[in-house]
Length: 523
Image 1: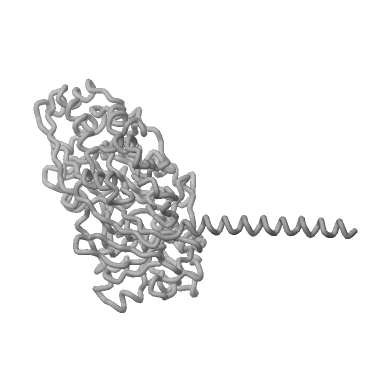
Image 2: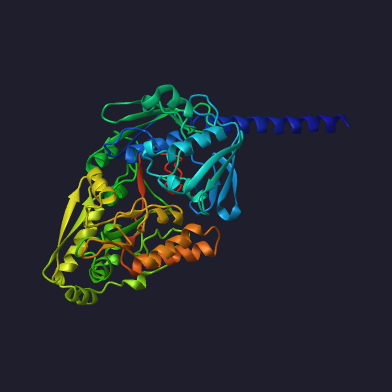
C-alpha cells in the first residue's frame, strides 16, 4: 500500500512538473512576442489631419485603423465580426436599429465608450460643419437616441440596411473620444484618442507618424508591438528601395510593378491577401462627349480591353478578369464576362457608327502605382489597331481625387470600388448619390438640361430598401448588371493586395481592408 502511495505521489509530481514546464515555455514564447517598434512604409498623402470623420487619404486610413475601432467589421469570408457593438437588431422593417454596445471599453484618454459617445459620434458625422465624407448618415439618419448606458437607437428616414454603413473598412465610421474634442477644440487632431490597439504619440512636419501601444486595450493580450511608425513615400520606387535596404520593416500595399523583384529577394517575405474587396474598373463621365454616347462606352470600356492580358501581364496571373464592377470577392458577385468579351471588330463597328475613327481620347490615371498606366498601355495598343488614338495622362493622386471624384472634371479614368457591403453602391452611383465620379445615371441634353436614368433610379430605390436575402441579392445583382449594360462602369479585375515584410516580422492577419497591426510581432 505504501509503495502504491509513493508511486502515486511520483506520478502526481511528474504531472505537476510537466504542467509547470509547459506553462513556463508557453509564457516564455508569449513574452517573446512583446516589444519592438514596427517601421511601416506607406503611399504618400498630403492630408495630415487625423480626423477619421472628415479626412481621407493613405496616412489617415492606416494610422486611424490602428487608433480607432469600428462597431463591426467583416471577415475574409464575408461574415460579420462584432467589435464596439456586441450585437444589433432592426425593427419596423429596417427603419429602426438597436445597438448593444460592448461594456468595459475605454478611450485612450480614460473616458468610457458608451451610448452617449456613440450618439455624439454619429451626430458629429451628420453635422454639416464636420464635412463628413460619409454623407449617407446626414441623408437618411433621422435621429440617434440613448436608450441606456450601453444601448443606442438609430431611427432612419426610410428603411435601410444600416449595419452596412458601420462595417469596418477604409472609409467607414471610427469612433473618437468626445472628451478630447471638448477639451482641445479644433486642436483635438493633435491629441486624438480612440479605443484602438495603438495610441497617438506624435507627428513630424513631414507627416511621419508615431503610435504607441495602448496598455489598456480591451482585447486582452494585444497588441504585441510597443509602437508603430508610419513613413510616407511619394515615389513607389523609393518606398520599395527602403524595404529592400531594411530602412523600414513593412511596405503596406506594395506596387505590383515590384512584385517579381520582391518575390526573388531572399530578404523579403511577400504576403498576398486571400481575398480583396477592391474592384478595378474603367469609368467615363457620361455628361461629357464622346462618353455620353453608349456606343463609345461599350466599345472602349467593354470590347476593346483585353482583360485576360491585363491579368496575365500586369498582375502576374494572380487574379482573373471580370466585367462586373464589384469585387469578385463580393457577396453578390455574378460573372458578367460574357457581356464584354475581347472583340476588336465589334469595338470598331461601334466606334465607326459613333464617328470616332481617327479621334483621340484621354485616359487619366493616378500615380500611386504603375499598374493603371500599364492597363492603359494595353488598351491604347489595341485601340490603335482599329483607328482610335488614346493618350495616357498621369495625375498626382490628390489632384486626381479632387478632379475625378469631387469636381467631376476627368472624362475617363480607372475608379476603384472598395465597398465591403453592396449598400455602398447606393451612395456611389445614381443622380442623387453623394459621390458619383462618372455621373452614372445623369446626362445633359442639348439644352444642358439634366436627365436621369429612370431604370437606375428604380433599381437603387429597391437596393436601398432591401434588408434580407433574397431581396438584397436580387436588387444588387440587378444594379451591377445595369451598370454594365449601360457601360457606366466596366470591371477590369479585382487587383490583389500584397505587403512586403522583412523576415523578422510575424503574425500579420489579413482582414479584407481592415489593415490592422494588432497581432504583428517581431522576432
